[in-house]
Image (cartoon, rainbow, N blue to C red; front, side, top):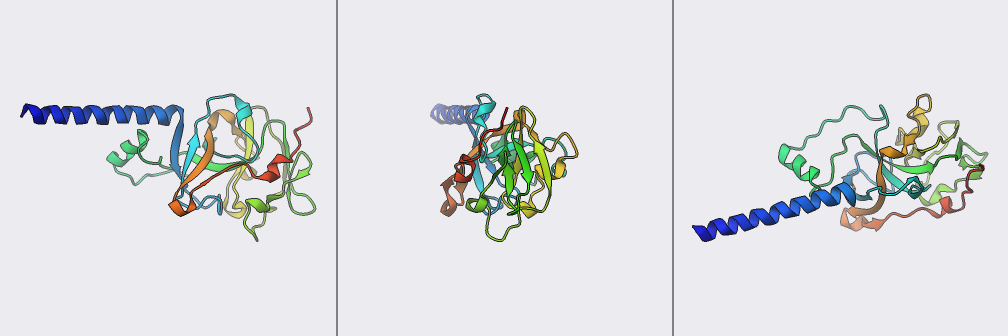
Length: 219
Protein backbone atom coordinates (compact mmCIF):
# COMPACT_ATOMS: atom_id res chain seq x y z
CA UNK A 1 0.00 0.00 0.00
CA UNK A 2 2.83 2.36 0.86
CA UNK A 3 4.48 1.63 -2.49
CA UNK A 4 1.22 2.45 -4.30
CA UNK A 5 0.81 5.73 -2.40
CA UNK A 6 4.45 6.64 -3.10
CA UNK A 7 3.90 6.02 -6.82
CA UNK A 8 0.70 8.10 -6.83
CA UNK A 9 2.39 10.91 -4.92
CA UNK A 10 5.33 10.91 -7.34
CA UNK A 11 2.93 11.02 -10.30
CA UNK A 12 1.03 13.95 -8.77
CA UNK A 13 4.28 15.83 -8.18
CA UNK A 14 5.38 15.28 -11.79
CA UNK A 15 1.98 16.39 -13.12
CA UNK A 16 2.01 19.42 -10.83
CA UNK A 17 5.47 20.48 -11.98
CA UNK A 18 4.44 20.00 -15.63
CA UNK A 19 1.37 22.19 -15.11
CA UNK A 20 3.40 24.90 -13.40
CA UNK A 21 6.04 24.91 -16.14
CA UNK A 22 3.34 24.98 -18.82
CA UNK A 23 1.64 27.93 -17.11
CA UNK A 24 4.95 29.83 -16.92
CA UNK A 25 5.65 29.19 -20.61
CA UNK A 26 2.13 30.32 -21.52
CA UNK A 27 2.43 33.48 -19.44
CA UNK A 28 5.90 34.60 -20.52
CA UNK A 29 7.18 32.74 -23.60
CA UNK A 30 4.57 31.60 -26.12
CA UNK A 31 0.94 30.58 -26.34
CA UNK A 32 -1.07 28.35 -28.66
CA UNK A 33 -4.29 29.61 -30.26
CA UNK A 34 -6.78 28.29 -32.74
CA UNK A 35 -8.03 30.49 -35.59
CA UNK A 36 -11.70 31.39 -34.94
CA UNK A 37 -12.70 32.82 -38.33
CA UNK A 38 -11.99 32.97 -42.07
CA UNK A 39 -10.68 36.55 -41.95
CA UNK A 40 -7.06 35.53 -42.56
CA UNK A 41 -7.59 33.01 -45.39
CA UNK A 42 -5.67 31.59 -47.15
CA UNK A 43 -2.74 32.34 -44.83
CA UNK A 44 -4.68 30.98 -41.86
CA UNK A 45 -7.72 28.77 -42.26
CA UNK A 46 -10.59 28.31 -39.84
CA UNK A 47 -9.45 26.26 -36.81
CA UNK A 48 -5.79 26.22 -37.79
CA UNK A 49 -3.55 26.03 -34.70
CA UNK A 50 -0.91 28.72 -34.34
CA UNK A 51 1.83 29.72 -31.89
CA UNK A 52 2.25 33.35 -30.81
CA UNK A 53 5.42 34.56 -29.10
CA UNK A 54 4.69 36.74 -26.09
CA UNK A 55 5.67 40.41 -26.32
CA UNK A 56 8.38 41.13 -23.74
CA UNK A 57 10.20 44.05 -25.36
CA UNK A 58 9.24 47.59 -26.41
CA UNK A 59 6.96 48.64 -29.23
CA UNK A 60 9.72 48.49 -31.84
CA UNK A 61 9.37 44.69 -31.90
CA UNK A 62 6.02 44.99 -33.72
CA UNK A 63 6.68 45.28 -37.43
CA UNK A 64 4.62 45.89 -40.53
CA UNK A 65 3.59 42.64 -42.13
CA UNK A 66 3.62 40.56 -38.96
CA UNK A 67 0.56 38.52 -38.08
CA UNK A 68 -0.36 39.29 -34.47
CA UNK A 69 -2.78 38.04 -31.85
CA UNK A 70 -4.36 40.89 -29.89
CA UNK A 71 -7.12 41.59 -27.41
CA UNK A 72 -10.32 43.13 -28.75
CA UNK A 73 -9.75 46.91 -28.45
CA UNK A 74 -13.50 47.54 -28.19
CA UNK A 75 -16.62 46.01 -29.74
CA UNK A 76 -14.85 44.25 -32.62
CA UNK A 77 -16.28 40.90 -31.54
CA UNK A 78 -19.76 39.67 -30.61
CA UNK A 79 -20.34 38.02 -27.25
CA UNK A 80 -18.35 34.80 -27.23
CA UNK A 81 -19.63 31.59 -25.69
CA UNK A 82 -17.28 28.66 -25.36
CA UNK A 83 -18.58 25.10 -25.68
CA UNK A 84 -15.59 23.61 -23.88
CA UNK A 85 -16.26 21.89 -20.58
CA UNK A 86 -14.54 22.98 -17.38
CA UNK A 87 -11.75 20.41 -17.67
CA UNK A 88 -10.85 21.37 -21.24
CA UNK A 89 -11.01 25.05 -20.32
CA UNK A 90 -8.58 24.38 -17.44
CA UNK A 91 -6.17 22.65 -19.84
CA UNK A 92 -6.39 25.73 -22.07
CA UNK A 93 -5.67 28.06 -19.15
CA UNK A 94 -2.51 26.19 -18.18
CA UNK A 95 -1.35 25.97 -21.79
CA UNK A 96 -1.91 22.30 -22.55
CA UNK A 97 -4.55 23.10 -25.18
CA UNK A 98 -4.87 26.03 -27.62
CA UNK A 99 -6.77 28.96 -26.14
CA UNK A 100 -10.42 29.56 -26.89
CA UNK A 101 -11.01 32.49 -29.23
CA UNK A 102 -12.47 34.55 -26.38
CA UNK A 103 -11.65 38.21 -26.93
CA UNK A 104 -8.53 37.51 -29.02
CA UNK A 105 -8.26 38.38 -32.72
CA UNK A 106 -5.69 37.50 -35.38
CA UNK A 107 -4.82 40.05 -38.10
CA UNK A 108 -1.86 41.33 -40.09
CA UNK A 109 -0.12 44.58 -39.11
CA UNK A 110 -0.44 47.04 -41.99
CA UNK A 111 0.72 50.24 -40.30
CA UNK A 112 2.70 51.13 -37.18
CA UNK A 113 2.85 54.44 -35.33
CA UNK A 114 3.40 57.40 -37.63
CA UNK A 115 2.51 55.52 -40.82
CA UNK A 116 -0.08 56.96 -43.18
CA UNK A 117 -2.30 54.18 -44.51
CA UNK A 118 -4.68 54.88 -47.38
CA UNK A 119 -7.08 53.06 -49.66
CA UNK A 120 -6.45 53.08 -52.43
CA UNK A 121 -4.01 53.76 -55.25
CA UNK A 122 -5.10 53.97 -58.90
CA UNK A 123 -4.25 50.27 -59.08
CA UNK A 124 -6.60 49.46 -56.20
CA UNK A 125 -3.74 48.79 -53.77
CA UNK A 126 -3.28 49.89 -50.17
CA UNK A 127 -0.81 52.77 -49.82
CA UNK A 128 1.55 52.92 -46.85
CA UNK A 129 3.54 56.15 -46.68
CA UNK A 130 2.68 56.66 -50.38
CA UNK A 131 4.16 53.26 -51.32
CA UNK A 132 1.88 50.67 -52.92
CA UNK A 133 1.58 47.44 -50.95
CA UNK A 134 2.11 44.64 -53.48
CA UNK A 135 -0.03 42.05 -51.75
CA UNK A 136 -0.07 39.08 -54.14
CA UNK A 137 2.19 37.11 -51.77
CA UNK A 138 -0.48 36.91 -49.06
CA UNK A 139 -3.81 37.91 -50.68
CA UNK A 140 -5.43 35.09 -52.63
CA UNK A 141 -6.20 35.74 -56.31
CA UNK A 142 -9.53 37.42 -57.02
CA UNK A 143 -9.95 39.01 -53.59
CA UNK A 144 -10.93 42.68 -53.81
CA UNK A 145 -8.79 44.84 -51.55
CA UNK A 146 -10.44 48.22 -52.14
CA UNK A 147 -13.93 47.83 -50.66
CA UNK A 148 -13.50 50.63 -48.11
CA UNK A 149 -11.93 54.02 -48.83
CA UNK A 150 -10.01 55.56 -45.93
CA UNK A 151 -6.90 57.47 -44.95
CA UNK A 152 -5.37 57.48 -41.49
CA UNK A 153 -2.12 58.36 -39.77
CA UNK A 154 -1.54 55.73 -37.12
CA UNK A 155 -1.31 57.30 -33.64
CA UNK A 156 1.59 56.73 -31.26
CA UNK A 157 1.75 53.31 -29.61
CA UNK A 158 -0.99 51.92 -31.84
CA UNK A 159 -1.15 49.71 -34.93
CA UNK A 160 -3.46 49.44 -37.94
CA UNK A 161 -4.47 45.87 -38.79
CA UNK A 162 -6.28 44.10 -41.61
CA UNK A 163 -7.25 40.53 -42.43
CA UNK A 164 -5.76 38.87 -45.52
CA UNK A 165 -9.29 37.86 -46.56
CA UNK A 166 -10.39 41.48 -46.97
CA UNK A 167 -14.12 40.93 -47.75
CA UNK A 168 -14.53 38.71 -44.67
CA UNK A 169 -12.55 40.75 -42.14
CA UNK A 170 -14.07 43.36 -39.83
CA UNK A 171 -10.76 45.02 -39.07
CA UNK A 172 -9.36 48.53 -38.52
CA UNK A 173 -11.08 49.79 -41.68
CA UNK A 174 -14.52 49.35 -40.13
CA UNK A 175 -13.82 51.07 -36.81
CA UNK A 176 -12.25 54.35 -37.87
CA UNK A 177 -15.22 56.34 -36.58
CA UNK A 178 -14.22 55.36 -33.02
CA UNK A 179 -11.03 55.39 -30.97
CA UNK A 180 -10.78 51.65 -31.59
CA UNK A 181 -9.97 51.71 -35.30
CA UNK A 182 -6.33 51.31 -34.39
CA UNK A 183 -5.18 48.77 -31.82
CA UNK A 184 -3.20 49.80 -28.73
CA UNK A 185 0.19 48.11 -28.62
CA UNK A 186 -0.57 47.06 -25.04
CA UNK A 187 -3.38 44.85 -26.43
CA UNK A 188 -0.97 42.80 -28.54
CA UNK A 189 -0.37 39.32 -27.12
CA UNK A 190 2.42 38.68 -29.61
CA UNK A 191 3.37 37.93 -33.21
CA UNK A 192 2.37 34.61 -34.75
CA UNK A 193 5.51 32.65 -35.57
CA UNK A 194 4.30 29.17 -36.54
CA UNK A 195 1.24 27.46 -37.98
CA UNK A 196 1.40 24.08 -36.25
CA UNK A 197 -1.81 22.29 -37.22
CA UNK A 198 -3.01 20.62 -39.34
CA UNK A 199 0.36 19.01 -39.85
CA UNK A 200 0.24 19.22 -43.65
CA UNK A 201 0.01 23.03 -43.29
CA UNK A 202 2.87 23.36 -40.80
CA UNK A 203 4.88 26.48 -41.64
CA UNK A 204 6.75 29.41 -40.18
CA UNK A 205 5.04 32.75 -40.80
CA UNK A 206 7.47 35.51 -41.61
CA UNK A 207 7.04 39.02 -42.96
CA UNK A 208 6.16 39.15 -46.69
CA UNK A 209 8.73 40.83 -48.91
CA UNK A 210 6.19 43.48 -49.93
CA UNK A 211 6.46 45.09 -46.49
CA UNK A 212 10.25 45.24 -46.59
CA UNK A 213 10.23 47.95 -49.25
CA UNK A 214 7.77 50.21 -47.43
CA UNK A 215 9.54 53.45 -46.42
CA UNK A 216 9.45 54.69 -42.85
CA UNK A 217 7.08 57.51 -42.03
CA UNK A 218 8.50 61.01 -42.36
CA UNK A 219 8.86 62.61 -38.94
